Amino acid sequence: MVDVFEEVEEELRNDKYQEALKKWGPWVGGAAAAIVLGAAGLQFWDYWRTSQLEESSDAFIEAMTNLEAGELALADAGFDTLSRDGSDGYALLSLMRRAEIALENGDNAQAASLYDQVAAASNDPLIDDLAQLKAVWARWDELSFADVEIRVSPLAAASAPYRLLARETIGAAALRAGDYDRAQSEYQLLAFSLDAPQGVQRRGQEALALIASLTSVQEEPLDDTNAAGPTATEDTPDNAAEEAGND
Image 1: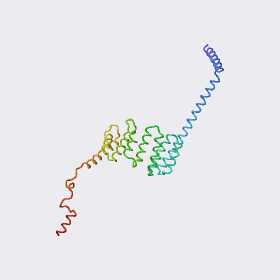
Image 2: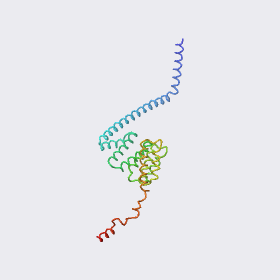
Image 3: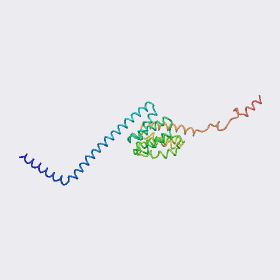
Image 4: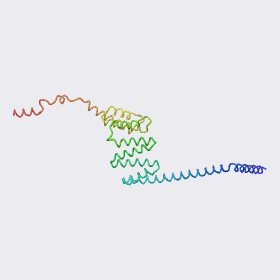
């Protein structure tokens, strides 16, 4: 008896399905086709994306192999191609590597330009801020303290990922410019910051010791003898002439 009821229900479902198909068939069919095509499109996109990532990965590994082997020209050419044609992540990494090669070749201007490109192309502060810092380091010799402060201060904000490195950079620029008070302020923050890595704390302490030695030399009073000028017993030109006459 149960089998009979099931067969009747199945027939009713089939009848309702047939009626619904007649009424909504074209629309349902179109929607189904769209879903199928959409799924196929997504599958193709995933396949293409995976293929592109694999190609970029292989090319990046090859360029890195050349770099580690000291083949800088070959490595740079590979990274250059990837920076233009590779997937987004590999393109940015390749620009960073090209900048490192430029630094290795002594071309700081080219390195700074490449770091600027990375910073402009990235929306990730981990990459953007690091590229901006490295661009400043590449231009270090040509930037004044004011230039460094303008460029780096936004990177030293409390929420910035490389705020400690940014403060260390500002401190170094102040120290180079002879602004010991500002340098001391920055390095004290680094030396005694609870969230600073040990390496940063150590460098901060070393910088504070250097500043202390520099300021102590500046504040050291002049020797009274030196301050009074040559004494009568010293061999000044006049004394030497008198002694020669007495002989």
